[in-house]
Amino acid sequence: MTTPRIVSDSFGSIALPPDALWGVNTARSLQFFAIGSQRMPLEIIHALAHIKAAAATVNGQLGLLPRAKQEAIAGAARRIAQGELDAAFPLSVWQTGSGTQSHMNVNEVIASLCGASVHPHDDVNLGQSSNDVFPSAMHIACLQLAHGLLLPALGRLQQALRDKAQAFRGLIKTGRTHLQDATPVTLGQEFGAYAAQLALCRSGIVQALHPVGALALGGTAVGTGFNTHPEFGARVAALLATQLGLPLRQADNLFAAMAGHEALVGLHGSLRALAIALTKIANDIRLMGSGPRSGLGELLLPENEAGSSIMPGKVNPTQVEALTMVCAQVMGHDVAIGLAAAQGQFELNVYKPLIALNLLDSLRLLGDAMHSFALHCVQGLQADSQHLQRQLERSLMLVTALAPHIGYDSAAAIAKRARQQGCSLREAALQLGLLSAAQFDAWVQPQAMLAPNPPERPGSAAG
Image (cartoon, rainbow, N blue to C red; front, side):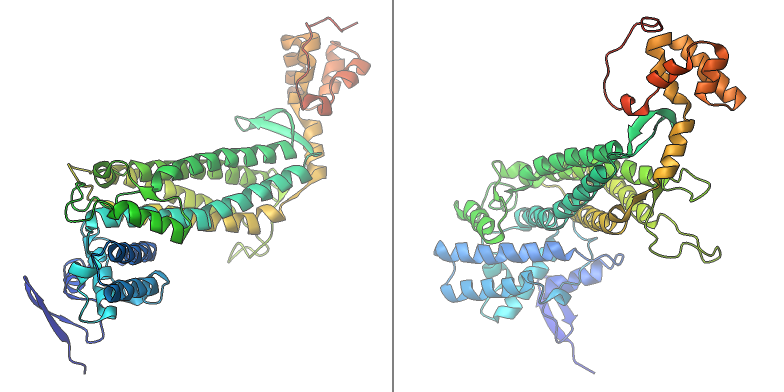
C-alpha cells in the first residue's frame, strides 16, 4: 500500500496519489467533475503547454520572471507540449465552462516538474487567466489540426476525384435529375463536379481560419489586461506564431475574444458545409455502385472486406457509410456549437470545453474519414463502361435532342410511345411518322449533347 500525499488550500485538505504530478485544484476537479469518460482533448493540453512556454519566455524578457524559473517553466511546458506526460491530465471535459480546471492542471504539473521553488499561480500563470489562456489554446489547437490533418486530407481527396474525372472523361452515361433519367453527361463531368464542390469548401475553410489566428492573450480576467504587462499578450502571440508556424496574433478586441466565439462558429460552419458536400458525393458514389446486378451498377467499388455474416460474397459500400456517419456527427456538432457559442453572458462565454471538444472532434473525424475514403474507395473505383453504354442506349431522355427540330410536344409523344410500347426511341419516332430514320440518326447523338449548342426553331431543319 502506498501512502497518499495530503495537500491543502483555502478549501481544506485533500489526498493525492503519491506519484501524482498534479496538485490540489486537479484533485478537486477529479472529485467534483466525475462526469462521463471524455477527457479534455490532448490537443488543448498541448496548446496550453505551448502558451505556458512562450509566456515564461516573454515574462523573462520583460524582467518579471527570474531566468532560472523562466527556463524551468519553459522546459517543463515543452515536455508536456510534446506529449511526454499525457497521463498527467486526467480531467473530464465536462467541467467549468471556462476550462479553468484543466488550465490549473497544466499549471500544477509544470510547477511540479520544476520543483518547490516554482509556484503554479505566481510563476507559471504570471500575467495570465484561464479566461484568456484557454480560448487561445482552443484557437491554436484548431489551427494545428486544420493545417496538419484536415486540409491535407481534403487535398488528397480532391486530387483523387480529379484523377477519376480525367480517367472517366470519355465515358458517356445517362444523367439523372430527381433520380429520374435526364440528358447525357460523362462520368468524368460528374467527378469533376465533385472536385469543384470540394474546392469551394476548401476556400471557405481557408477563409474561416483567418479569424481563428486572433488570440485573447493579454486580456486576463475580463478583457482589460489587469495584472499583466501591456506588451505581454502581443509578444506571446508573436512568439507562438514563430515557434508553431501559424498565423497567430493578439486579437484587436480582447473583450470580444473572451466573451464570444464567432471565429470558431465560423470555422465549424465551413466544416458543416464540407460535411454536406461530402454526403452528396458519397451518396452519389453509393448509388452508382449499387448492385452489383439489381442496382445501377455503373461503378465497381473496391472490395475491401466481407459485407455480411450470413450472405456469402456480399460486399457493401462501407467507406461511404463511414464517411456519411462522420458527416452526420459533424452536422450535429454544429448545432451544439451554435448553442454553446450563444452562451456568452457579459464578459465570458462559459461553454468553452464543449466548443473545443466538438470542433476538434469534427476536424479529426473529417480529416481521417476523407483520407480513408480517398485511399480505400475513390482511388480504387472502376467504371462498368459496357453497362453505361447499355443504359445510355435505353434512355428515353435522348429524345431531348429532337425537341429543337420537331418541337417539345412531338418529342414528348415519341418518349411516351417508347415507354408504353417498350421499344426504342428510334422505333417510336418512325412509328409516329414524325421524322425519318436519317434525321433521327443525325439529331440523336449523345456525344453532341454534352455541351452547349445553338437552338433551332422547331421545324426549321425538318426538310
